[in-house]
Amino acid sequence: MLCDTAFFVNLPQEVSTYAVPYELRKKGIRRYGGQGLCHQWAWKKTNAFSGKAIKRAISVYLGNYTNMVAIDNGNPRETSIGFTSLEGIISATSCGDIDPTIIFQLHATGMSLKAINKLLSTDSGFKAVLGRKCGFADILKSNKNSKEIALAEIYCYNILKYAGAFISVLGGADAAIFVYDRIEEALPFIVGICRKLKFLDLKMKKNIDSKGKELIELTTNNSRVRIFCLRYNKWNSFVDLVKEA
Image (tube, rainbow, N blue to C red):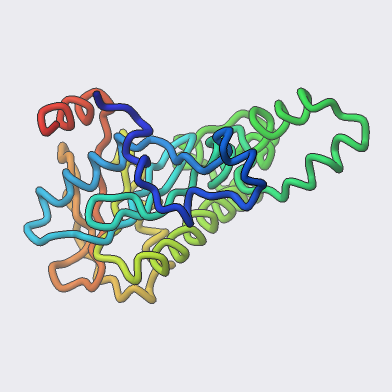
């Protein structure tokens, strides 16, 4: 039976292991990854479309809880999500990667562990930077005031940092796959990220026809690394994977 964590069962030991005592690791303290079905589907769908085998890919799920996976020949090689989705890229309400000693510092000031958990899980991320409730769709439609610009820069930096690390782990990349449910709306944002990846020798298309398409390629055939955008529908992706299982 398909499940969202099955994709990460074979996550390399050096990736899944936290440097904590063995007794804790025996109890399940490790990196688990997340949204495996989405990333597995994206890799398979893009390979079927590309006409040329894509072995090393970075899959980027965009949204309120953005996460990334490095994929090597269909298997996960790295993931931005750890023990929970709190680790990784900043989200709509959670902080993403954070120095764990901050928790002890907050606790020392009198905050309860329950209050700290709420702060980092539901009162941080986009919401904390802007000072109001905000989702990924709001970032795409923002008027770009100073706080919104700062948030977009922090968010993009998070993605670029993980992309650089993943490319290093994979020893290069054949493709980057961006997944979002309303992909046309996210295209300018994705192109903006690609402009910051010039070191990959990307050759972007000048005219992109995205209307009604499930999968869009932003790069030309001679681009060193290919960039794909894939429209995500959780139910359709699940059905596709069931058919192949």
